[in-house]
Each structure stands twice: as C-alpha cells, then as structure tokens.
Image 1 (cartoon, helix red, strand yellow):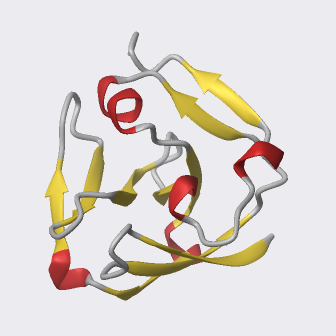
Image 2: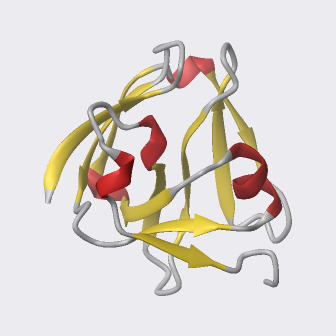
Length: 117
C-alpha cells in the first residue's frame, strides 16, 4: 500500500489516497464508466484525503444512486466517487487514470459487468 496523489485534468481538484495497486483495478462496462473510460479501485473512506478543490466539485448520481460521482466543474474529469461498499462501510472509488506517475500498462485490469446490474 502506497500513498498516491491524484488530480483532475486542470489540477483544481487534488487528492491523496492510500492505494494498493498490486491488486486488480476494475474496468467496468456500465454507461458512465465506459463513456468516460474510468478505471477504478476502491479504498476505505479513511484512506482518502481531498487536498483541494472541494468547491470546484459537482455531484452526479445515476441508476441506483449508490455512488456519488464527483466531477471538476472546470475540466469535467471525474477523479473519484463516494459511496458504501457491500458491507455498509464508507468507501471511495478512485479513477486510477487520475493518479500522478502511474504506468497503466503495469496494472492488473479486471473486467466488471456493471452494465447488467
């Protein structure tokens, strides 16, 4: 588990997260993930810190409204979302494409059929 810094494209939204990128990241085929090219990993809420940009976020919920998707109002990039895991604990879904200094080709990617849920 390592500390990673991430940001939206314009840099107004910045965060820090404790993430184990040795575990597979999720490539979901639901409408929002596939349209935006999101690649996700889920972490406990206490492993996430929003560094800047809280006032520059807008929220979107869809389908069963279990996850609050947060987008930068300036550039439109979704860096993370928040919700509760199957066990009821608060979690954060990190878009690993927004992490600084990550080689995506070295990640283990697991397809997930969110379209059928």
